[in-house]
Image (cartoon, rainbow over all chains, first blue to last red; front, side, top):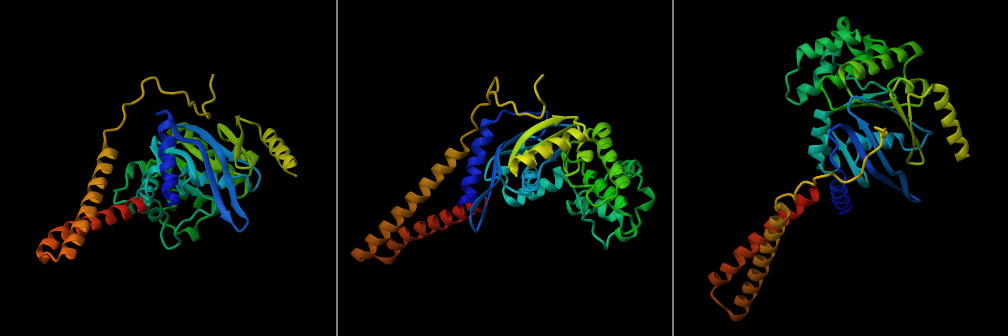
Length: 264
Length: 81
């Protein structure tokens, strides 16, 4: 019943939002509440955000500010309590669960901190697995250009355990891009890497944005990582506190420190 | 220059026409099913009360049963959505 009400509210909100063909992701007045023992906790409290096609957006904020919930709602992994989420013009909140799963598989790419590669499969099999599950033939030319670009062409027959962390993340990035998704969501993609590996992955993400026109939304704790994006949305208490354009890492760190201070 | 990361919520210049009456048809079908179910149940009760031939009772009962099943299926499918 609650889900039906939420879906109806999402559909009504979607009708009120004008079409925006140049936006890869649109969130309008998104709320997400969770129930715990003490009542309802508001993880997102009216988030509105537009990610233009071909943009690289970082999302930062103190722990518990709603970054992961934003990523989950924006990617269609979770459904907002109210508000509108559009990916490539499609109203994700209005999709029923099986259709939403198929939508994510076909239109959304994910890169996780822990890579999430299947250990029993080779790098190549991991990359093509989502396509094979979708019953689609891999575009060999596209995949070939991607693996050349990220520098793992000679590692395709290796299993994840035989690859370094950076190589595994590069495999995960190719897997995310293989289906030419509308947007790639990255959750702390450099969290498990050393400084050099992180710099290479961030350079790679920026490259796929600048050269392939891919849209990337990345959650990170690292101001240096966020500084590689076109803009950084800073979250606090379930809201977007501000969107900073091409900020310096020091400015981001200072902004976050001021938020932490305000909360203390 | 407007911020590309902010949503412009100003109304569209030419709003699209309202979608074709899929919702109206759906509501109409639901109303018809409820009407058939109610009439069928009432007819069946009356037939039983006056001791009419069972076949006459079945003429009311069968459509009522079908309508109730259809309403249940629709409700479950809508819930899943």
